[in-house]
Length: 408
Image 1 (cartoon, rainbow, N blue to C red):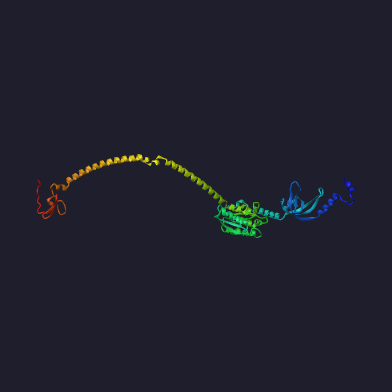
Image 2 (image 1 turned 90 degrees about the vertical axis):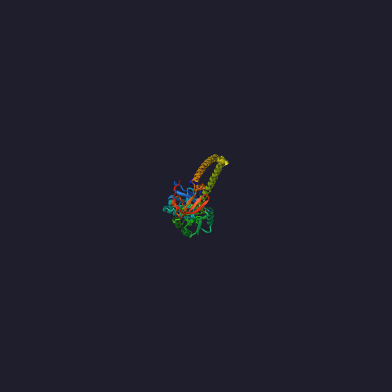
């Protein structure tokens, strides 16, 4: 076959092999650096090399990199990564395929930033800055909440609106700072310290979404160390759900958005409000049930005979009282009659013994000046004045003589 071709070709024509060798020699002398995005990738431990394709808006280029070079680069390739390559062009003559033989690879643009962020995160993780043991608990009902964010973004309004709805009694201490650019990390660190010194119970560090480059201040080592060292618990709400910064790792609680951060610091308050609502409902039901039971019992009591006819309850006792009253009255009457008889008898006896009664029968009573009854002649002397009481008056006399006389 080769002989036939050789016989039929012009003397100045090259064979395919020769042409490929010529091209291979020319290409392999060119060493270049290029930047492209990885669109295809094959990493197989059974192969001797890593195969991938880089592209830009107008062209694509197949690449290969020996495993020892790939391992030494320390780069983890991924589809979509922007990479900077150095190497040379080469031809695989057997397939007539051109490849770019990669000597070195490095992430470019955002890829380089992500690698640097990952390396910093690994170093701080080894130091223990992200350990769960050093995370501070979020207060149940914070009275003063610090807020560090841009005064011009939507994040500040989202947070304030959420706190006003869920925790209206809390006081917000706000520090407006830049959240992107070269000075942002330093401003946020200073603001966190100032707000913490203001006596807040927790601090929200938030910003809205943005590109990876926009969020780079939140990967600053100084800011991360400030977050880890402050005695006040810090809640971050940086970017959107997929965005995770080193500041999020160091924070005591990471929320997916600024609104979620505000909800997190007021979660216990909302739960308490919900519990109070549940307890209020339960107490209302219990009170209504208790009142219904009491009303039913009261209705049952009201139908009892004692309440329908109260006198029936006292009927027997009233009759007993009437009987006792009658018996007592009879006893009292008999007792009074006896006393009257005894009194009449005593009065009669007294009357019999009364001097007045004696006087009334014709006798008289003599009394001296002292009013004493003269019962003997020895009680008076001649010249003494005496008064003689008779039944109808008193006779005043002067004693002329007092003679002893025998009474017969």
